[in-house]
Each structure stands twice: as C-alpha cells, then as structure tokens.
Image 1 (cartoon, rainbow, N blue to C red):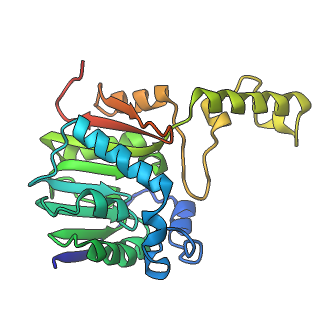
Image 2: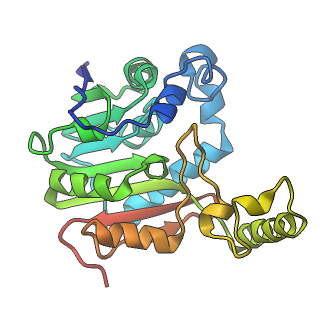
Length: 268
C-alpha cells in the first residue's frame, strides 16, 4: 500500500473561508452523512440513488470525452472522503492520484479508510488544505478532477487560472456533479419569488428586486459554501480564466451537469 498524508502549509495572504472550513471540519455534523463509512458502513452510500446517478454521469462524461486515466497523474480537488475517486479510479491504472480537501477528518481519516476498502492503493496522496497553498511548479497533472466541488469555490476564476499552471499541455479539467436546475424548477422558484415580493413576505423587498437574479432564486449557502452559477456565469468564468471553450453535459437524471475543459484546445 502506498498512501501519503500531507498537511499543506498556509501561504501568506492565502484566502480562507472560515465559515465553510468550520462546517466541513465539524465531525459531529457529519455523523449521519452517507460518507461517514467508518460508523455507518458502505451499504448506505452504495445503495444511494443520488450517488449511483452521480457515478453514471461521471463515467458517461469521461467516455464521451475520451478522458484516459491510464498512466495519468491525477489531481482531485475537494475530494472529501474520496468515495467517488475510489469508484472511478479503482483499477489502479493511474500513475499517481493526489487528493486535496479542507476537511481534516475527511481527507486524513475517511479517505484512506475508503480507498483501502476498495483496494485503491497505488501512489495515492491525501493533502489537507487549500489548492491555493499548493506549489503550481511542483507537479504537472494530466487530469484535474472535481466532483461536487466547483460550486464550493468562492474564487472560481482564480482557481482555474491556478489549475491551468498545473495542467500538462494536453491536460483536461473534469468538473462533475454540479447542480442542475431545469426550466420547471427555475419558473417554480421565480413564481415563488414574485409572490413573496408582492406580499412583501418577511420584509422580502428589503433585499430583493422585483426581477430576480439567478442568485436570488438559487441562493448561496453561507455555511456549506455552495454557490449556484447560471450557465452564462459558468461561461464567463471559463472564458475569463483562459478557457474560451468547453463541453457541457446534463445527465439524464436532471440532477447533475458536467463540464470538460481541455488545455490548449478550442472546441467547435
């Protein structure tokens, strides 16, 4: 078994989201979550329809866009307990797998336990800390993987610019498990918004305009750090970060959307 536990040193001026960091490092909050496999076992997460759909969406995206894991150096961000990684990379045919997360108990306790359970044991690193504390000149990656992670990043443009420096020339960024909101959900929330505005529910007009923005309808989560971007906002983020084109996929479950960005490539 080749596991390495690393604690990243916080750089001067490094941004820390203290509210989110406190939430994700509170083990008492996570006791009943499906990722707590040490106490709950693996049946709960393996039988979850949500995570079955997530895995299905990832596999389809990687096949459709020819994301080749074999002999690749892989970086997984906000990887948590690494349950998803243990499923996607369980053949052990990668060259190296580096997992990074701000939650100490997830990345240094649950993740090694999960990887060991599924037999993923070849050159795997578990880093506690922020990707912004990594040295971009230290390693280059063929695949940078983010599962249910990108919408937790408060500075997505800064992140993608940093990741671009870590990518090999033909490297790829795979962003999966992003929340998808259908037109039906959008209009349902918009209708609810207008009703609240018209009756001024709990002084609703104080913080909201008559015509709602995307963030008005799909509000960020202060503690978890979730930020729900609209498609036009994703487009702006990618273009501003130096990735003018990308592929987007919406899974048949209508739960998730994914984005694939290849370095030094323009998609038609």
